[in-house]
Length: 261
Image 1 (tube, rainbow, N blue to C red):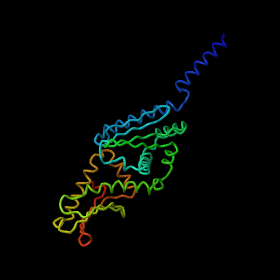
Image 2 (image 1 turned 90 degrees about the vertical axis):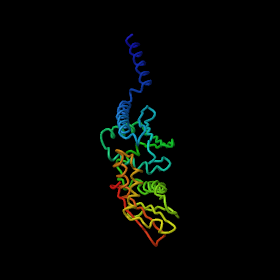
Image 3 (image 1 turned 90 degrees about the horizontal axis):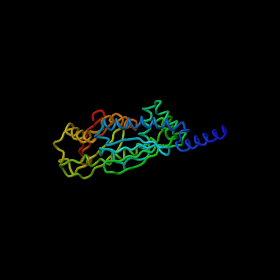
Image 4 (image 1 turned 180 degrees about the horizontal axis):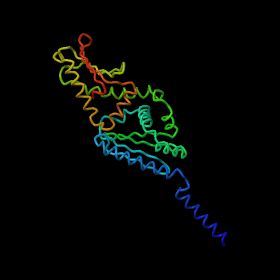
C-alpha cells in the first residue's frame, strides 16, 4: 500500500513538473528579470512619451520578447541596419553591466533562448531583431571598436544622409544637395546655381539655420539624448557642417557640435 501510494504521488508530481515546467530553475529567474525589464521599459516610455509610444517585455518558456513602438520620426526602421542595431545594443549592454543583466544572460544561455526585439516606427513599419545569448556574451566582452564598427558606422551615415532634404532652404534655386563624412563631421552641402542666393547670409545666419533643423530633429530624445549622442561619438561623429556653395567660387560654412544641439 505504501509502495502504491508512493508510486502514485511520484506520478502526480511528475505530471505536475511536465505541465508547469517548475523543475527548470531558469524559469523563475527569467520571469523575475522579465518583470524588472518590463518595469524599466514602462518607466522609460512614461518618461519619454514623445520618443516612445509603448514598450514592454514578455517571457514564456518558448521566447523572451521586447516590443517597442516609437512615437518620433527620428528613427525610421528601414534605415536601422543589423550592425547598427547590434552596435547600439552593445553600447547599452556595456552601460548596464550589473547582476540583473548577468542573471538574464546566464538563464538565456542555459535555455538556449534568444531575445527577440520588435521595433515599430511611426509609419507602422516593424523590424524584428534577434539577440542570441552568444551575441550578448560578445557584447559584454568585445570592445566597441571591434564590434562591427565599420558596418555600424556606415549604417548610421546612411541614415544621416537620408535626412539631407531637411536642410533644403526655402529661397534660391538649389542645384544639388550632397552629403559626406570626414574628420569626425557629417557634411550637408547645398549647391546653388550662383552665390546670389545666399549673398546676404553670414556664418551666424547659417549656424542658426543648421541649429533650427538639428534641434527640431533631435527635440524629442528625452533621456535618450546622451545615449544616442554617446553612440555617435563612439562611431567617430563629433558634429555637423552645413555648407552653402555655388560650386567652388564662393562657400559659406558653419560647424555644429553635438553638444550645441
